[in-house]
Image 1: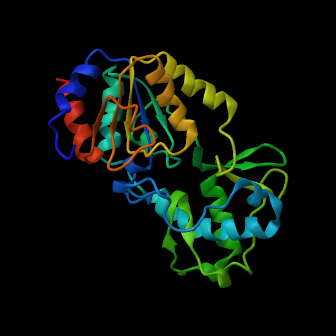
Image 2: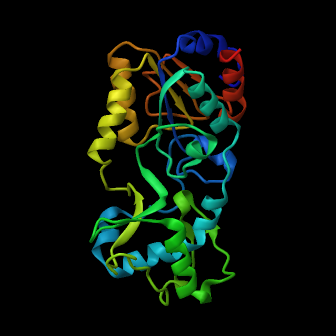
Length: 277
């Protein structure tokens, strides 16, 4: 639907609390962070770097980090929008029991949500694959900026998850960052790459939240990633309400009890206002 005529159904379903909310890229696009897919669920642009490619060669990591160095400031400066704030308020009021996100931008945390289950990790952390230590992305960013002054002022088109569309000519000279702890060169953002599995403890937390939920509300996700879609299947298989606020097609369209095709930035504040009065 392209109006708010079904909001009453959503109000009634969530009135008693216990709902889990699952968010995707669509909740963060109003904050200026691009998404991967169009309204039909088709991936935009080029294929993202696969995990196996990232591990395979230093050249792949150089290419990744050169583009990511230019993309990080926009992610770092992004601010939560009204949809993030509304979900934080619903959680404070006990209307939602858990918040699961596929996003890696930490905007839910910045909005005040607690104990967010980050299915795909966070760009704000960097993991060393050699020693296992984690570093703040801001610290790694500072190192890269100092080591690669030739990229100062280079303009690159922003892509999803802090990536950019950078001319390959700028990549050859790039000095790849090293781990501050062991000086290892195999460091990666603490996120789940394409071709990589969600960490088992994280997947288990998300599944437990879904199994114990009164229902599930999907916000801004096409659900093309199986790690998210499987949670919807659990809800549907147990006969619990499965609803979505999403502009465009989702992988779970045939499972949904209710789908509202509207801006989550506009609709979620209305939901929070109604349920907290």
